[in-house]
Length: 259
Image (cartoon, rainbow, N blue to C red; front, side, top):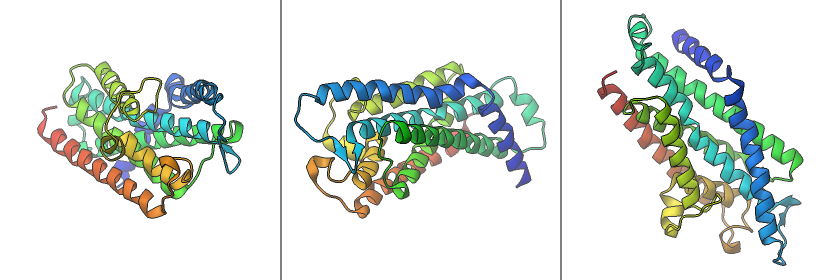
């Protein structure tokens, strides 16, 4: 157990060692949220609707969760980079010669990347809640949804790291996947049309947002239809199942792919 804690501490230091990466996961999302919220508010300004809920701004709230989820689904870059560098790069020979099992490095990389992702998400949510009237909502649902999104992304990063030839490709592929998922469910500047069932039950970003929306913004989303907490946990269950599938795939591929 101590070995796994040591590797996690090692990867945590690497995760927080570069200020630019910390800024990309904290300040950049806040900046995008502000820009998108201003654009969306200007678009909706001509409509005579009440865009507040429990005293909070609904437009800014919806924008916030789409962006937070998008960045959580991008966070697999970190685990992917760690695995590629340490198990497929030049460093792999030194690690193979060490008494530490490979599983300890994988566990440490995933755990540290998850902590980094969740701390970043918490920072963003606190900032927008305090300064931009964002409704944080039901944390019983929001916390596991954000955690599952980050965990699924770590598994995606490991899977991609097992196939690419250059570490830089991991960043590009995961960013494109996350951006595409957000676009397919209407969460970013560019919206790609997709069937409603696919948006709500197949695309991970859509499932994650649906879980949050049905638990926190009941009267606002889904054409004013009210949902119970059971509906929210249904979406959480779907997201957990998808995460499990990615985890199994990452485990199988990591064992079979030569390093």
